[in-house]
Length: 163
Image (cartoon, rainbow, N blue to C red; front, top):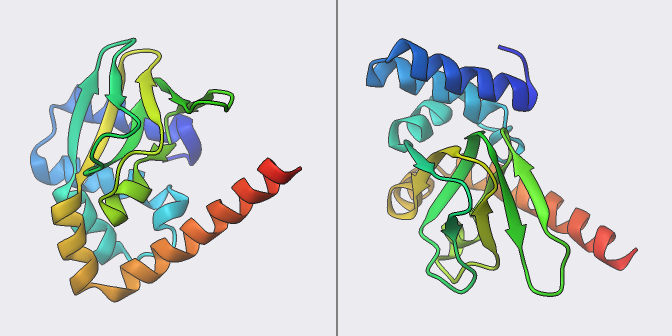
């Protein structure tokens, strides 16, 4: 399947149209997860494990998916639709299919650093923190790959914010 947001949205559409079995849906989610920079360094086996703990969730337009200050227990990948990241004092950032959020709270369990609101109806792939942490503890290479991506994102944010 093609890379990027269009490819991820197409995978999500294929899942809905096929009324896929959990096994087939899991295979589709492996393809989605491998498109994400956060998981770029992971093996197919690791991606299959991640896909196995992921669940689809939907939110209607204008609903809050997460609120700044709330407990962070879930990582989300946008499969279809668009959301806005809202932080006081910052310009809102729009995310769409192929983007993800919640990785900081997923890793440290601390409060959400931003509010995420659905701009449209959104279909998300959700990975819960307890399952994810068990996986990271048993698979150190997964943790290393994620740490590298988070460092890259932090550097990029620092360069943007100081420019």
